Image 1 (cartoon, one colour):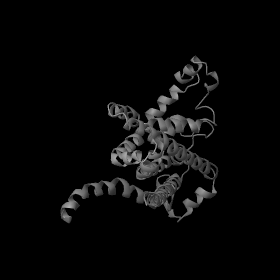
Image 2 (tube, rainbow, N blue to C red):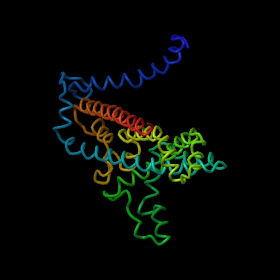
Image 3 (cartoon, rainbow, N blue to C red):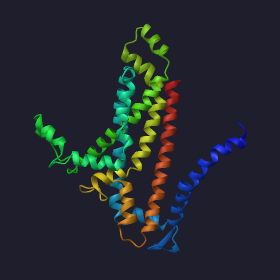
Image 4 (cartoon, rainbow, N blue to C red):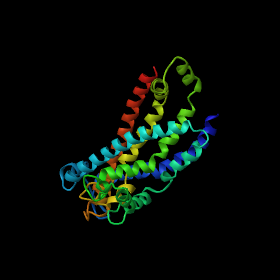
Length: 299
């Protein structure tokens, strides 16, 4: 395809990317280098706003806890989505008659807005009238009828479980497509050599699924680091209860819109810039590490 024709196809996407991604990103970076009096820009402070995030309250006490929750959210969702999603995809792959219908069924929740899912599960898990605890008590499991979103020790795990429930359809679809792309002759040859189903899966299918596992892991990392709608719907802007569901994006929201700090544009822009560096750098590092694993497994 000629270069000019190719540019015509790419130009609209580049224009949208520049207007909605690059321009806001560089604007936030420029705002972070100035002091602000409300919406009036003050003097140039260099990295002063970034320094504030590491030396002043409430950032010193809230940002590390929020970042820990982001990391837990990433690890929990990645491990569960990769294992459960792969298991479901493998089972559905063997059920050719109902595979598409079940894939659509699993994919429905992630077509709904996370904030709607969050509010829905807040009602379902309510200790006063929620049907989940009522069902547990109904089958004699009273000990498991807990205040899932009201206990600080349980709330973050409940958020992880809700997220996995909503997004499990994505890895199911991706792993299903990856399994469909693996030649059946490879599995048949392994079975003819006497390999069991587990050996065939572990030695043949799983290495060939490494690129798909890497894709799910990197996308889960990006999603976990920028998660906002679901934690906001479950715990509000303060990450209730007692900050147990606080995330970096919620700290940014409070800084930008609820802090009352006259320099909130400067500090919130600095936080947005650091969050971008964290997500972009982490995604690049994870992609590099996964590519090395893929080359080692495939060799």
